[in-house]
Image (cartoon, rainbow, N blue to C red; front, side, top):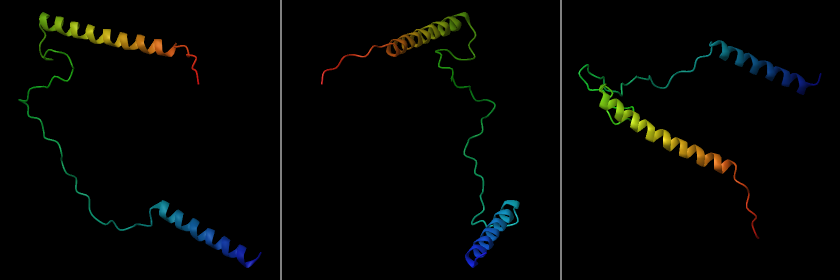
Length: 102
């Protein structure tokens, strides 16, 4: 073997040994700063009123017949909008190309 080949093999062995030591966790790098966790949320109290996150016009706690009627009417309107969007999408997918002049 030539001297260049031997040097290449030695360098590869040194790099492989360093990777093995690093992978095993024996090679530790010093940390620059300690990380301190910081709370960024405000804890909820037991007396807080739940927010309406359903998107429906009534309070989630309201279980009356009138609230049920309002919610179903709102859902019907949303479903009609979804149906219109779906029909428009279906029409655009089956659209035929138009002959263009250049």
